Image (tube, rainbow, N blue to C red; front, side, top):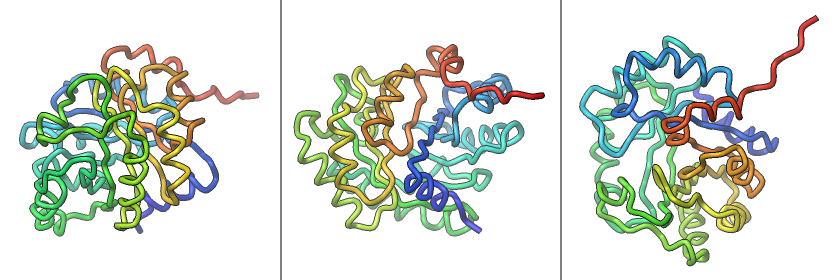
Length: 247
């Protein structure tokens, strides 16, 4: 039975906040996986996302297989390309880049993935992906040859997110991009959340517990953190689960 989306939706309805750690196969060394995942396991993380804008062939399959040895957390693919699909994961965000106007990333890549996805048991979750201007060019911009939505045009961001919901997306993902100078603002998150009846994911540029809490308080249902862990693993200490008292 597929439960990934059901659990995310139930968490939203109960106002239980979720946290995903994003791991890029091209940046994570296999001999570091065990220690890294052990830290994830004692953190507040509820999900592990795996993916990147450009990933070598088979790297995702190898990494996911390794990750699954050390955790029971759901592993969800966040694919930049069809080559990043592996049946070793639990689910996949079926991304459509709504902020861009490049048909390759709106529908062409999705069509190309169907023959491969048809042979998997992955839980596939339709996701509207919206890139927001953050102060510097991101890998997503370079790879997709698209521009992000301007930070100051909040109405366009709101309307794009709502259009995604009307189109049948089950999740909306607001992304500032890996290593973003500025995370998605509280105002943007709050106003988009007010319009949606589906879970809202927020990622990019979140490097402190204060920024994480700010995203939650503004309405994010699930926050994705990647670069913060890559640059400063001490961040794990700030988001450890409280120790359970024993008698």
